[in-house]
Length: 312
Length: 274
Image (cartoon, rainbow over all chains, first blue to last red; front, side, top):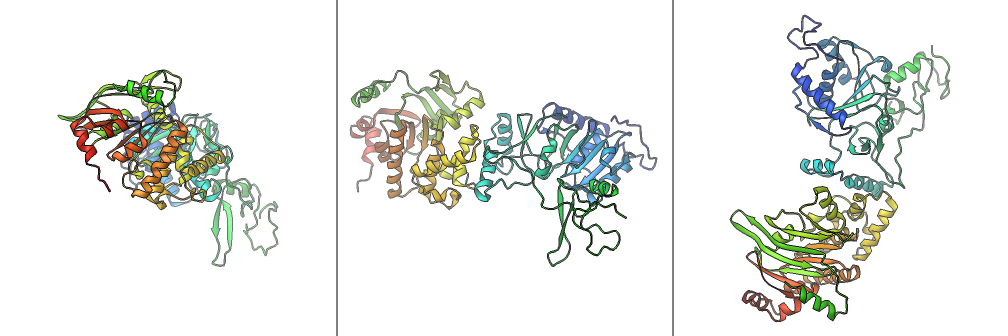
């Protein structure tokens, strides 16, 4: 993953450096990334640049990707698990154009996966890098608005306040009702916001084979989880951490134990639950798994739920 | 300075004199540019003793309290605190982490305005439980149990445990703030005008409650007040400040019944008689 300043694949874009950012900026970002890897979970400040996209669209993730990407990399971009939404398509096209890299939607083929708020269902392997787009990196922000104070709390490891939030959840709802951006403790030291991923994905961060990098462009922070790092979701002894459970399998591919999106079908209360990870769903359907509502030819309600007959 | 007075009082009450003071303040001075906040203040505080700092507005009471409680760095002078292990530590030589840990375990700070000392947007139970969670308690049931127990001790009904303090009256907020501070069983509590802004009947009940808690728990308290009646009710000993300096110190009854310094005489004679 080394980028060459002179390695401009497109003559038409000669005025852009490889992967858009200039080399000095990439070096600055790489230094921040290295520091982040050295201190897992610690938010490293960096001189975030203006990117040709608005804040909130992944400027942090794009800068991290631009700093680590090389001509041999294969890039996958997902937005809430999907490869085909605006944000994912645009960022993939951006790097295809400015870096001339190969892109893919297949999780196992990718070397860099930039993600907005999901971790792919397919387990990541060594050598892969997962780049998160982070809106608000500070887990204590809504509990303590002063940045001077939250930095001090991180420095002195004063994390009692984080449990005050979880306590409030239980007091109001009878259980920990936080479902996304669920705070984690990294390698027994720093409390970290895993970006607004559903808490379903929290266990995947623990002892991951892949390197995980987090970029927050507006907030100018980078943090990291190196491979094989302990990532523990905060909880109470009598209210342990739990991930979401779904009543029914994916309506298209029949997958269980995956994170599902609810899709409203009509205005009469009709709805279906489908895999949030589109690549996972598509590859399962290609393998012949069928969900209850998958219909590529007219099906008159004869397919029972969970039937695994080959499609087509 | 007044050590002999204290020992005398303790002997009178039949309590054996402790060997060493809990807190030793020596020549504490804080200046704001050319102005004096407080100057050259020295005293000892013994375990279980209540000390009142009285004086008019601007006399340096709050500056002194903040300097002692490590909320404001003094210009010169030292504050030594006897830790639970018996060793005496200079609080300004500790690391910040140690000092903050001390503040939320062995010390308490009751603000005049409860909004400064409470989290107004989290429930009363979480307010009381925060210190427990900060020292590593991770059992929801136990934390909640302790919170309910402490709310009962400060006369707040159990069914208010999940209400936010912004729905509480002024007196309830102040009692909640006291519960929040006492839940870790501190040995030393600082209070800055704890009854300020409350009407007299609520003040009386709060003082009654404080007196009960102080004697039950054997708390050492430094209370700043401009209200001599509060000092009379709560404190064993008092120091009178004027223009940043201590002008008189002694047992509360002695100072109030037989004030020696002309300013103290003025102060005592200024109490409204109803």
